[in-house]
Amino acid sequence: MTALKEDRLARGLGWFGIGLGVVAFVAPRGVARLIGVGGHSGLIRLIGLREIASGFGILGLPKPSRWAKSRVGGDAMDLALLGTALISNGNSKSKVAVTTAAVAGITALDVMCSRQLSEKPFGGTRTVQRTHFIKSLAINRSPEDLYEFWRKLENLPLFMRHLKSVTAMSATQSHWVAASPTGGTVEWDAEIVEDIPNQAISWRSTPQADVKNSGTVRFQPSPGGRGTIVKVELKYQPPMGVLGSTFAKILGEAPEQMVMSDLRRLKQLVETGEIPTTEGQPAGRKTSTSRRFDKWARSMAEV
Image (cartoon, rainbow, N blue to C red; front, side, top):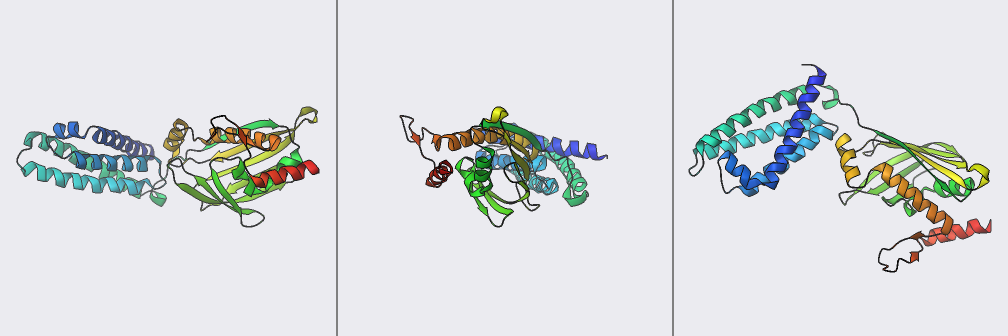
């Protein structure tokens, strides 16, 4: 079987697992009636969650062979449960028998897929989904001011809403902590690979980082000498590949959306010293975002 057919089989089983899992989780009683058993809604919901997890794992995570193997293990459990249901009273034996045959067929496909993926280097290879975009915004401050503010990496969480902290570990190495759309946090290390004072800063995540990204921010004088064009170029590998990218856009957490919003916040911050907010303020008053920035802004005004 060619690599293309192998990938199609894996993706087909992944999408099948997600679809089946959603149906089992949303309508467990209907699934129970369909397969000829009753009174097991909680168990069917758990099986649905397992199918969804394995489907996402096959479609988007770096080592799909592990998730394909988890499907085989799940199939074995399902066959054991169906065998018990087949000899138990109160179930539709004909429906259970048909379901058992169908699960046995799916198990054979899962075993085949698991073996094929396991034979690939590093547990399976696939095309990596990457996002590449450029965003820019005119800001009424000099390139020197903006470069100095951005180059002090601890300032970035002041206007990048998803960032919780950035800690400089050396002149070029830093540790980043960001909020996750699921409510937790993600962390990674990054390094500055190019630093042109007052013009550009380029960075990339370290090879061990879970969040793969690289990019450049440029500070270009605006035409006529009025302010600066801040241009951000970002390359980003979404967690879970194309699925992660799609869901991030639905949730409003896609990198291209966040970066444009962050640039607007940067503009507000460096031009006025504060970012308008309505959080906890029915009147929508402005509030200073940071004493640290207030001190920095005053020092810039005195120069």
